[in-house]
Image (tube, rainbow, N blue to C red; front, side, top):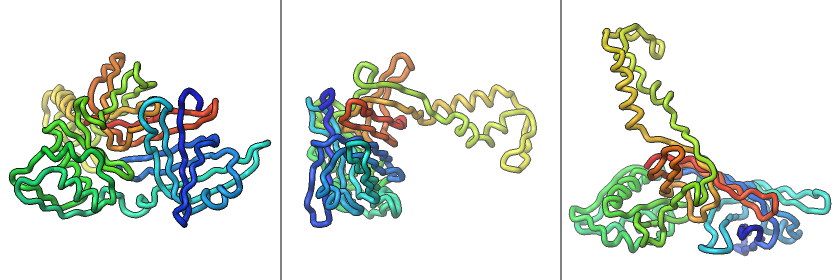
Length: 324
């Protein structure tokens, strides 16, 4: 493969028969997000035979995209969903099949809004909570043995959206140096220190960071606190169509309040990186770029992955990161 790249596209038909088209040239782009608003794939397969096209690359078939490198860990699962559209056409001497896919469970309410009612007795361990959440959501737990050492002397209970249950569990585990993230098919448990089999991705300009931009919405934060800001300014203002009566105060107070707002808000960044096979929405990453004064932990909110095996194919990830 070109520069050690490895791209695997697997399709499974209604009879459960699976085909691997990794031997063909593939160009694919997928988008995924934490809340499943974006979970789409478009892939172009070069010169697939008629049997593969008619049996596997058709509407309704399951499809999974893996990407990585010849050296190192196995290619990671970049995307999993169902084909909604398939078109085949000739381009010179080549036959190109373009498939488009979506993750079907994103069509109804978001995956993370599923309601749960969880109750565990005294001295229960965190791996029991993980097992229960995974059973409800149909996820495969990976590395859960690392959470077995975390005990809840007073028990553990939660009622509400599963996203908040996982946030609560994540906070409980973080105090013990353990983290979790959820993928399309897995809940992965990892340690923040190096002895974990699911270590945090450490991204720097020397290890795969291609570009980094601050996308924090400072203007939006200021607007959302306009009432508080306006009360610090010694002049009248119209907010949301209503006149706000202001008291004359030192206008420096407004800048002090802005500084407080900006300091406490979560920063966001967009990053372009090389392909990291284990990176997923909800993954924890440590980003360090001395040139931009960035050095901290972030969570992957949204990712767009472009991979291919041709000499002119892309092989990179565009990430939206939120400060952890």
